[in-house]
Length: 197
Image (spheres, rainbow, N blue to C red):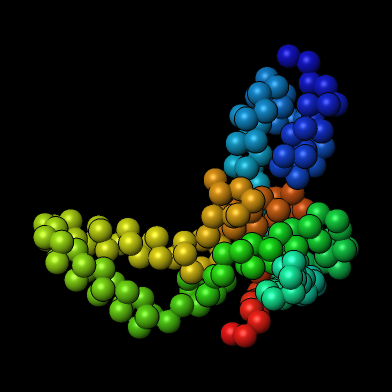
């Protein structure tokens, strides 16, 4: 199949990856956009893993005020260079993260920030629920683990399904953006404000 500029642009619009990366992915997948998206995501995640741990001293403070002015979010997102922090793609990424926080109301950025005593309390509640429901002892541990994982997807930003694309988590979105921009990116902290709370 001929790889046209139109199909390359379509893939770029869907993934945010660079033009040459899109063209290579389409060549490797014989023009199949869905397979190319998967390939770019895999490569993006691999690229992202190689960038983790690099210093992030630049970035932006992004904000989102929901229409009606009763809900607002401020989020700090860091990257490696001022050049990347000023790109349209990084600015859009930061705004999307702020909008997601407004919509999904996470408690923290990652599970490492959660108080371990709170998680133990949740585990105890889930264990007692399973016992009260008469679940066999040998499966209770797996049930509790599953419910704790679900809890993480409700309260931890990077584990939450991205509101604009529920098939991927915020963590996947961050890794894809790292792959596309070629720099380490970190969501450092956020505050969510609702009028009257």
